[in-house]
Amino acid sequence: MSTCGRCQKSFPAGSRITEFDGKQYHPDCFSCADCKKSITSQFYPFNNDYLCSACHEARFPRKRCGKCGSLITSAGITFAGASYHAACFLCVTCKQPISAQSKISMVDGQPCCVKCYEDKHAKRCSRCQKAIVADVEYLEFEDKYWHKECFTCSKCQKCIAEESFYQDGNLILCKDCI
Image (cartoon, rainbow, N blue to C red; front, side):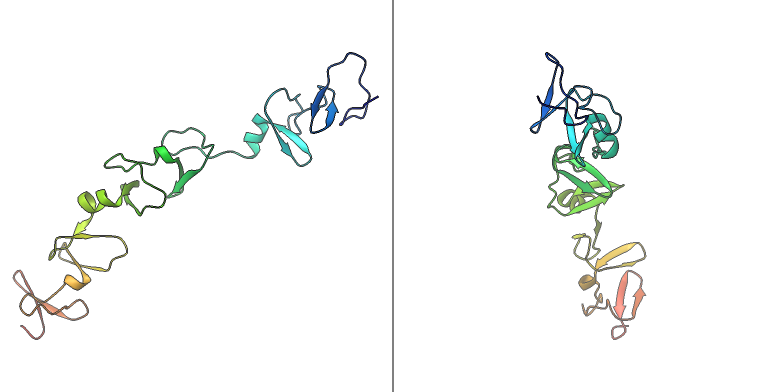
């Protein structure tokens, strides 16, 4: 006669038996290790015991999407401390999905794809008018911006990013051209 895998008592004739992983249990003995309620649906193995889905969620909360709030049950994207479903991780400007492998910029605390950031949000170099992107050295002077290599003398075009310079009206001059 077989016995219960938890209480080791035998099964009365005609009684219900719960079976899992080669062991048999009285229905009341096959219970959650935390809340002690009988497990009748989804459960999770835990330290040679079992947890019901509610107790498992309480012990091991799954991440919720920073955009839609739903549980993330498969691979997601973590950005700036928040987790997202891949389909919810959208550019704040164009609303298109951003790949986890893409370079990402922030605009008002929201993710922005590189193209939108460069086209619509980035500072512009006063000389070449191209975007000044992250991780690129630039200079700022009187609310204007320059790539380091674009900060040149207005007369001789010598790069003066590492030198003293002088302003003469709208001109920026090196010490040799004043």
